[in-house]
Structure formats: structure tokens, C-alpha cells
Image (cartoon, rainbow over the protein chains, first blue to last red):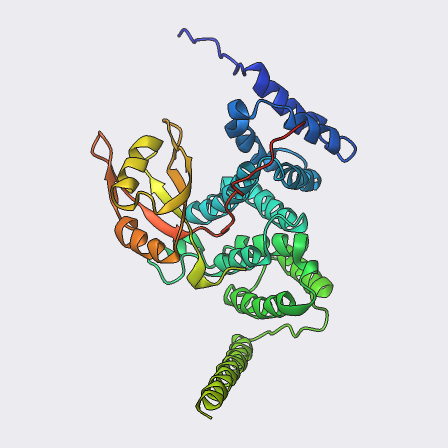
Length: 262
Length: 108
């Protein structure tokens, strides 16, 4: 049978140039230069294509993902619309990955987690976005009819994603409210992990490493009852604090009324 | 950080892959013209290999408008010319950042 010759994709020169900058020129020493070249591009023509290329972090080297985050932060000064879009797009990729849960997408999902973490490191996303993403990983699809498709009981991939994100930026959550938020998350995470039953060794070792780096003195629970008790205690504690706060406010309020009356 | 009650940026997901920006804006403006100050539209893609939904990000001027918008558009069904139905999802955008209006002109 006759077969047509396979035509390789011909890209317009501008696209070829963008790809050359991002996928072959970019390294630690050339990042400043690449940033300058990107700023010189005709933005109205190629912004959409550039966004597409920035989402291809999984095609490059894992160790260079932070450079794409650096470029994003660098461009935000002049192209804030673009820099905002990069964040929206990564978060969409993460969400889509959860919705589809396809085996073939795993590598890119790990890369996108890393990218999000690096965007935090370059102060381009807030910690609240990181924590929302972490919790989304624990709960997405739970309580729905598709739970077993979205996160099958023996599937440990979401644990891998949490580890990736926290390996990338978890060390910054070491003081103040973000420290408390990470403490709290790690207990929820432990409950999720225990729900999975026995883990593959590679994941278990990565978990041990993660806790050793981030919270060396935190209890690792081995029974679901223990972690549930810890969570109940945590919730009660949070409840007391918020009650105290509202009581204090009432106190202040009544003081005001009092002074107004007298 | 913004609290739950003052979030103004939403994302519309699962829009028909081939809907145009204009067609979507017309639908939004029918009830919400003048109540938002920023929209970003991301066209989808429909080919034999894959289908990618369109998406849109909208920033409302007031948090209350978000609630009303979600009541109307969350679960709203778009029908394309072939009769396929697309049930839209409205959610708070996970990142609430909106571009600064006065982006500096790049002197390069």
C-alpha cells in the first residue's frame, strides 16, 4: 500500500527561536541572557506560544525547572499578565492531572509540582496556594462515586506528588503561621498515608527522608486510631483558640459599649 | 492572604473546546456586564487525538457578584453545533492574583 511521507512539523522561525532559547540555550549561566532575549520578543505575537512552552517543564531537565520559575518571576515586572497566567496554568495542569489520573502523565505531573514549588521559592505564589494544593491532593475525588478511579486504594502517586512539592519548598515553612500550617498538614497527610496500607519501599524511604528534613521530631503514627486522635486533639485546640479570639473580641466590644454608656 | 469572603477571581472550567472568546463574553455580559474588571480566555482544542476544554478566568469587582455568577454559571450547560453538551464548573481560582493594570512598558 502507498503511504504518504511523514512530514515533520515546520515551525515558524519565531517559534523555533523561542524553543532554542528555552530548551537548548537555557542554563544557570545563560538565564540572564535568555531573560533579556525574551523581553525583546514581539509579545503580542507570541505570548500564547511562550505560555505553552513554559508549561513544557517536563520536557527539559528536572534540575533546571527552577530556571523557568526564575524567568517567570523576572518577566512579571513587565508582563504581569503573562506571569499570572503561568501560575493559573500550572494549577490547572495539576488539577487536570487529578481529574484524569493517567499513568502516562505521571512524569509531567511530578514536573509541574516541582515547578509550582519553585514559583513559591521565587516568591511568585503565596503560601496559601501551596497549602490549598497540598490539601487538594489529599481530598480530590473523595466522597464521590469516582473515588476508586481517581485515587485507587493501591495507587501511591499522590503521596509522590506531596513529597515532590514539599521537597521543593517545604523548608521555607519553618516559622510563624506557615510553620503551624505545615505541622497541621503533615498530620492530615499521615492519615492519608496510613489509609493506603503498606507502602512501596521507595515511597516509604522518601517519606522518612522528608520527615527527617522538615520535622525530625514529629511523631510518625503507625495506627489510624492514633492519627485520628491527634487530629481530634488538633481540631479541639483550634476550636478553643478561635473561641478565645471571639470571646476577646466580644470583651472589647462590651468595653466599648460600656465606655459609650458612661 | 485573602480570606474566603473577599475572593473575587473565578475560573470557568469545562467550557466547550471550540467556543470563541466573543461568544462566551456575550453570554457573560448578558447578566454581568460591567461587574468584572478582568477576563482571560484560554481556548481549548478539539482534534481526533485529544479534546481540551476551554477555560476562562474572571475577576469580579465585588465578592458578592461571584456568588451570583456561580449560581448562574456553575452547572450551566453549553451545547455546541453538533448537540454535544458541556457542563461548566465555576470555582474560585486557586491563585487569586490578577495582573496589575499598570504594567510597566518594557524599555528593553
